[in-house]
Image (tube, rainbow over all chains, first blue to last red; front, side, top):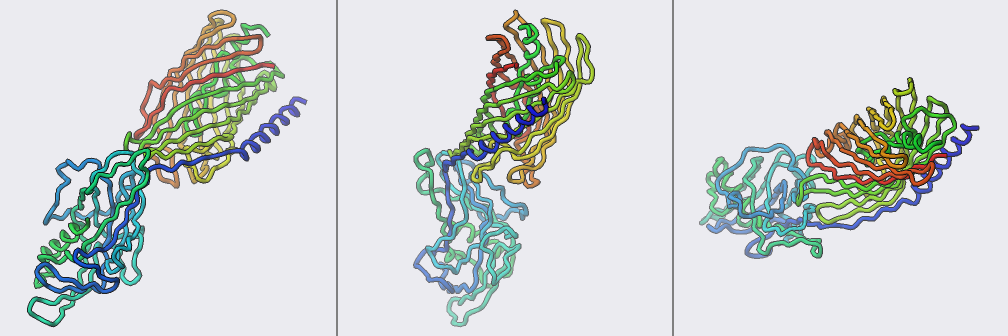
Length: 246
Length: 283
């Protein structure tokens, strides 16, 4: 008899649980979301998708036939006064191997950017979910791709590569084009960019979009093409590439 | 049943399983009492609890959980030695993220059942075993984080020992319980935990009693997909004063707080003072 009563109780609570479970309700209110995009962008004129032909500041004509760059991480900065927030030049940091951590202010998903893509057609890198604050800048890092990298191309294996370029250049005073291939896996210093207008995120301003422009037509400015295979020229090129992200 | 005995029976109000993954206190106390049971006793309880918990760094990745739960419980003494109980919480949760996103949830939580076995007792001393489990009765809401769910959706068996010392108007109680959680919603696995309760009370008169307890919890970090949550696990201790008042024969109400005094939690994790209000009816 006693056990019958307890059995009834168990059934009752099970029934209550089942009914209550069915009546469960959840509500989600979206918070602040910042989306990062990146696109190739010529500084002088819009160049259509496909092979990209342009001139360096020295007048050397460059044609890129394949060009892929890995943006490893993008971070939103709220303090741009730090001593680190300066333009680094001619310095490379040691190679890193771990993933950039995904945090509310940092996108840690690497992306491969196809520089030959249509200009202005931005590639979405990802979303972050930062706290309400005023943000003054963005830090981007270039690093070699891994298996988790988004938009890996099929024509070139970008794993363990930061940059892959195929193209040709026409030296000053000459007509014949000289082909080149540049294949780099070094990690340059992060690029720190001040936003022209501070980004204020708040209760009433919950979404924002940051578009990174890659000024690829400035990559070869000052490069000594006769010494392109030397490490210092590769480092010079990498620094140009880092600085070209605006 | 005399009021004095009632006070002794029910003097220890349960600290709650504060949330689905953080458990502090001995939930068997109010439903089963610590005294020698008499066969055929039924007991009903309803406990309201309000709490807050924060994880992460302020202005960076902080998440704040505000939880209120109403837990209904029933127990039955099948003999002087064997008590069984079941508890079912109705949960309201509000989860606030650093980016102003918010999740709210109302629902039934994970039911739990407990068995209390009295191995030995005399006039002043009594001790025995505790065992039980949480059952995955909470319904998963797909677009909510695990902290926003009303339960973890996991079996969480437990086993432990208890001891009671009685000398009216004083009463002492101690228990230690080990909890092991299986995997629940979203491959979430709460860390194993050891929960202890050390409590003393004095009956001020025949209708009012005062209780003080130190309730601690040690737990291993939680895991999701075998990845450890750095802001979980560690040791937490609550100083828990309570007042118990008999408003009529067989009916007790209690009001108490749990004040965190030992804060050795791992990572960035803090729990705030918990408020508890309960009613117990014996029939």
